[in-house]
Image: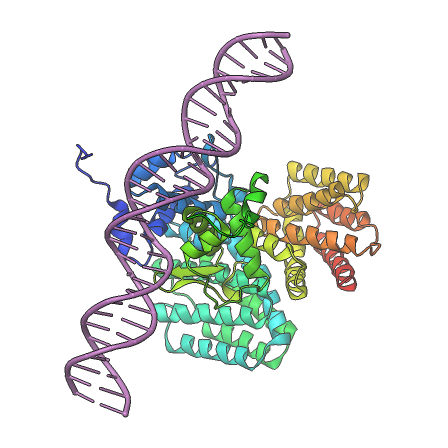
Length: 245
Length: 245
DNA sequence: GTTGGCAAGTTGTCAGGCAATTTGGCGGCG
DNA sequence: CGCCGCCAAATTGCCTGACAACTTGCCAAC
């Protein structure tokens, strides 16, 4: 069945070699469309065959992509009813991939605020636990990350990676799996906003001393100091982010 | 190819009418097997065709189930390498479904500890925000839930539902989407442990006064009092849980 | 006006085949 | 002897086409 119109729909296939498999591209496409509000909650997607054809993929690939969205609470599909977008409060917005979709466009200001508030609650507490439970490996990981931050700057990707690594090491030092799970979400949000700050060429203060204070307190095993230092760090970061949006 | 052995493998089809579709049953089966440690991290599942045949489902259904597990960070599959279970720290243990799988067997004590620690960090902070931002609807939802708790007891499912509803309304009153997302995870964990406490016939104290104090502080718009009351509540719950495990 | 059944349409599952991709060994080369 | 690059097999990834199961919403009968 040759198509009469010129097939100008290889939008998907293009991202094929990007490590992402085809269904990943479809999931990304639909995910961003939903998270960005392009497809409003309550709305129902057109049928699988139609939609799969429109994206020029097979129904299997399309369905597997929809399964991913379902697993992340973005949509719900029932026979005869179709696949409909769930209300925002059913979304798993802390899922790393959902966050990635949310940040792939201009990040919503409200979401950034919410994430920083959560960070301001969780990270000081995590620092407190870390000061009590850290072991040799944790300390080494944090010091390595700190060294990386000193070597590079937040303007470089390597520097941001070191920043991520520091926060990841810290949350890991809390030896609390639930907080470690939040680490993936939080550090992702942090790095995106950091990059955003960077892009808006706001010259941030040197972040190393703040981080070093937190690190020292944890190494010293002082929970109160660790918590306070981390709270100060997060508050400063929040100020920076607020002023550049 | 007729099977010689009597087909004693309709394990999956049995749960078909349970609202869960077939792939849901497969995902549940594999998910619990992984979370419970029956399939250790690093291990690789047998091939899709073999495994699908063993479960007596089609490859499509099996693959869609695996996509769900992939979306929740439990496994990772690459061509020729097979599907392998990821290390624990890659799991999205705060995902409601992963939590459900984790609690479908005897819950791991470490996990319960971690969840309560997270709860002890998040809920007081959420109460603080709620005291500042609650609106009429939030107050109504909380009072309704509180009334439900008064009417029933935690021994009944209705009572536990009211408890869940109270914590859900509280987190919702924080008007922070990130914390609301945690609500699903936290309240799930809370309700399971509550049921567990109930089963081990530990006679708990009356939970209504504690909840009422939190509610009053939020209605009064007093962030400090709300936070303190909630912290007290969580600490008591933690004590109860600890003593019954 | 309410209640029951009925039909249509959408997702759910199945089967088989081919293509894409990565791993791990094997041979050539330094 | 060790390292590097190539090749082939095995597994997942994707496609096609068909049928089954399940809802929903209409429609008729009470």
